[in-house]
Amino acid sequence: AGVTGSKYNWQVTKKIKDQKRDIESELVSDQDSQDDNGIVGSKFMGLGRVINDTTSVGAGGSALTFGDAQTAIPATFRTPTAQIYTGALASLGEPDFITILKSRYDNLGATTELSLFADSALKSHISEFFGKYKPNKDGFVVVVRSMTETIDSRKFPAYGIDLYEGDFGTFDITLVPFMPYTGRGYGLNMEYMSMRPLMYCDHTELPYQGGGISGLIDSILGYEFGDPRGHFKIDPAS
Image 1 (tube, rainbow, N blue to C red):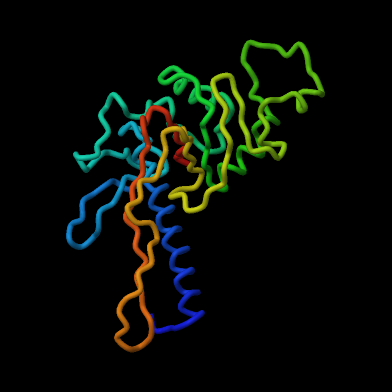
Image 2: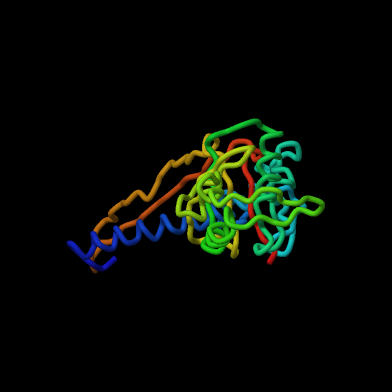
């Protein structure tokens, strides 16, 4: 408000970017849904609460329950505990991903549409350790070591390609800001995900009443997440 011409257009562009960041921040949060209460507008559930078994305790320090009966996910469709990692980030290894992907496969079968949206700490951890180190296996002895293993490896993140391929599924890895906690990541089946906008960063110029041009940037939207059993979450407690 209070500016004209190119300065006004610049402000509109800036505010649209700000609103898109706000939407992304809410999307990756742990917030519960709620109706408009006259003070705070309606809210959709963040992904942290969607991908949730209501018992696992991660970085937030307490289990995430559903306070809105209208959108509470039925127990039979909640994300299995095996698909929610809450251990230390430093301890996260390929066996954990095998457990997660096996659980997802057992529940819903194979998919080629998984994507892991990770914060910088999780992405760095995957790049540093996955594909380069393997934990010792008690009771087993290595009988063959091959220097070509790094070439033949199907776990590529450590070599600059943002892709993980395992026996029970494959997912690409995308770096995302605005995660609510360090080490947080969401593994999403993109076949299930879609935006449902009524308005998305729509600009309306208000009637001129002196003092310069003013306007509103409005968004009213939600999103579909499909079957929560098709997703997984990395939520390190430490």
